[in-house]
Amino acid sequence: MSTVLITGANRGLGLEFARQYAASGWSVIACSRNPGAELEALVAGSANVRWHALDVTDHSAIEALAAELAETPVDVLLNNAGFYGRVSFADGGVAHQAFGATDFANWQRVLQVNLFAPMKMAEAFIQHVKRSDQKKIVTLSSMLGSMALNTLGGMYAYRTSKAAVNMMMHSMGIDLGKQGVTAVAMHPGWVRTDMGGPGAEIEAEESVAGVIRVIAEL
Image 1 (spheres, helix red, strand yellow):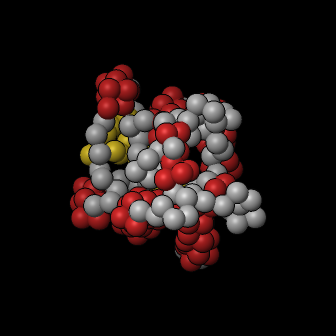
Image 2 (cartoon, one colour; image 1 turned 90 degrees about the vertical axis):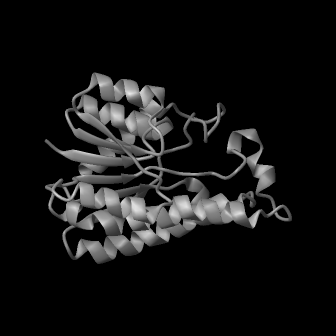
């Protein structure tokens, strides 16, 4: 049985990844700060899903989880946990991240979740991934991290975190590719979640199904 470890698995895309991977017969290690009612129900109803408490900004907690799972090969390490900012995109986060309104403490938190956490997860779990059959590390990014597509400006904290994670994963792909590990950043689309808001283009089910197909083909 293949194993996927998913961060931020208690809602949105992370919860949908857990659902779809479990339904297809994978062993799912679902990680989040709190389980939430929907993830609790999934764990209770599926023998394939187990939950572990994890705050991805707590590097000691990441190291402790890696030690706890030391004997568990991880075919896909899926860095899904993400943070737009203190004020969500749907609730006025564009204005909150406009030039002249910079909240540097908030920006630091965005970088901790979106950039530093995936790096720490990759470094902590690299041996788990290398012992697996598939050997894949995937970090969810965003089109808002694209310089070519940025024609509107603004959203400084979130944009820079995703541009940085794109470069980080590119370097990781080069470095780990020499060891037989595939490492990539992926854009899941603009998805109707708490982060993406109700005006987004696609539902979580469609986004996740598409991402899983691409991961399978890597």
